[in-house]
Image 1 (cartoon, one colour):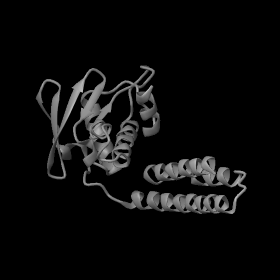
Image 2 (cartoon, rainbow, N blue to C red):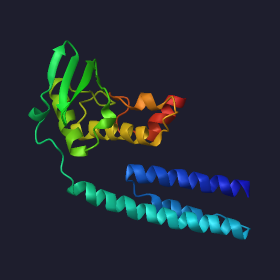
Image 3 (cartoon, rainbow, N blue to C red):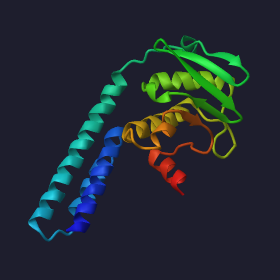
Image 4 (cartoon, rainbow, N blue to C red):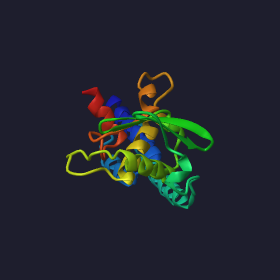
Amino acid sequence: MKKLKTKAAAVLLAMLCISFCGCSMGEDIAVSQTQVDVSSSEGSAIVSSTTTAATETTTIAKKTKKTSKKSKGKLSSTEDIKLTETEEGSFTFIYSGETFNAYYTTDNWKIIDSYKITEKSDIIIICTALSEIHPIHNKDYTGYREPDDLAYEWEQHNTAYKLLPDSSPWKKNTKDVDLDPKDQGKSFMEMARDRLR
């Protein structure tokens, strides 16, 4: 029974991740959980409700994707953020009436309080503006990262920030994003795993 509860908890954690990421792997989780051999009737109820919840989570994720495509950002061009270099490597930009700080060191843009900016289209515009001044190499150092790719990393930080409880010492590490070559294409789970090694 303990093993079953552990599996149910793992599925619930995965579903929580799905709901924040907008992934569509809920159906895969549901299928794998229905194949678990359960001997007690209480265990059957746990697996059955987990399967239903995974399917519902997938439906919610799909609806969220449709809604997000319709949502319009606040920015229409890179000029809207008024990106300004205040001293070498130190920049400010304006978003939604608030001034944000961005710092550039070799192959790294650090945006302070990046968790406050959540609209993907706006994140892409900000990443475009930053890349026009100092592009970031891709993980193989064969070229440079695209704004969409940088925006994905930013969104993964935002997801981690939302998931972590306020009491977590890791939360303060996710409030600012570092856009660099090493985290290209990684999900927030992969980034967390790398940092725990």
